[in-house]
Image (cartoon, rainbow, N blue to C red):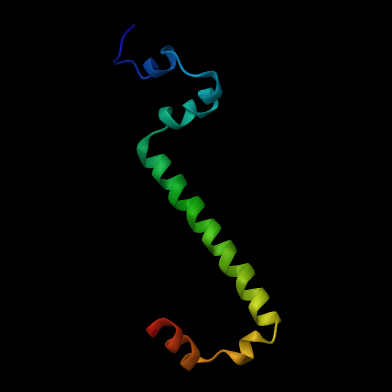
Length: 75
């Protein structure tokens, strides 16, 4: 077995419960980093979108002003 071959990791014993994760190790690092950053960005933007809609749909937005937010972060 050639340890320098790109598929060398697939020939070693792997716990059967972890075999579905082998594709992570065979992916180029730059692609994995792009996927992690992209999925994190999508998740955070989706959270902001739904939070913004929910907050502005209620009357809570009328009760909060910059003084309230400033007091919250200064304490």
